[in-house]
Image (cartoon, rainbow, N blue to C red; front, side):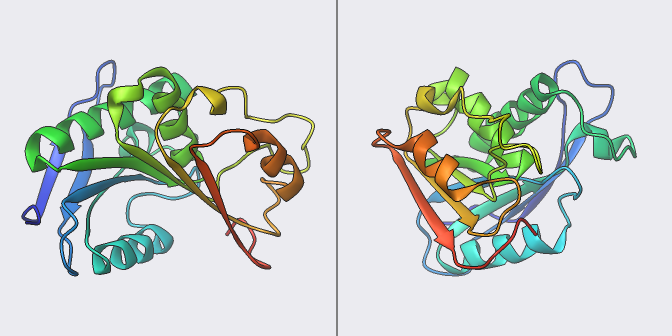
Length: 196
């Protein structure tokens, strides 16, 4: 059974603002799974790609929570440092788990949001049952020599990473090498897709 639709304001430890979140129920046959979806650095919870992702996942049976990071609630376009982003993901995930009581909880999101969720799961394996990373930013644009992969092997839950073959922030060969030998990782490549 799907959770009922809800709008929340969630307190995040160490932040001066509560973050806005929405719970959207599945429209397809319910899977009793909840996806907590974090936005990318340049977006917010209402970004068209997050809304489209939510609509697609709801159609196949996921309940979905979209939320803003605290820097967006403060009206800033500059992302907070990663530890603060991770605290925000953890607070939203805990609230969603308590309120919706899903059988399975999946953390993730787009770009920076997926990275924050991945880093949280590398530190707190029990924070979720799986990770869904959309357009994972393996390295900064034009800087493949600065990989963001040191934590990936510590993630113990199943991972699905969906990236474009033309993504300037995720070189295909480097990503394939970074997760080779990690049995819980699956990568799906979208041919000719970029980071956008």
